[in-house]
Length: 206
Image (cartoon, rainbow, N blue to C red; front, side, top):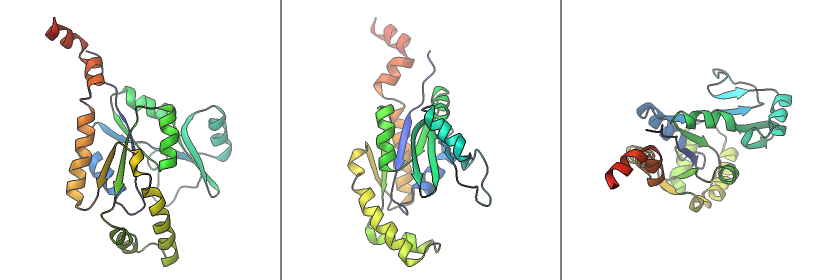
């Protein structure tokens, strides 16, 4: 039997939709899932570790990786660079692990160009008012920052139909069950079963 290769998932959502809480809960319950760790040139924040939250590199190293075509996708956000390493993703997929890329819709388009089999999941809030309440409830952003996030959220959410799955995060446990179901179901797609169980299929049909 051939070892089953993992699936690459793109997970996107506006800030405050609960995406991070959902994938962290998924990681705790599904040992076959990993979250991609991006490279960045920004300095580590208190409590962050190299290789856990990010791979922290200097600008010259990051630019060298761009020149070597080492990234699935990369972007400059203000004064810092962020990017997703191809090799790190491929290594996990070859181990049979499902990998989550937590990126926005623009990064998702870049990834799909390089890896058309990527499976997109978009997380939506149950309403704009609920989204604003969640952002306000964090207690970390000023009113003008929340207003900018809300404006950006509407633009981001307009791209939901570019994704294979949409999960509305109204009830957290229900949304988590839907997320789990997407991952489990995609491990039984016909092309994957044909690849790893070719001998069985030949025996059954002979």
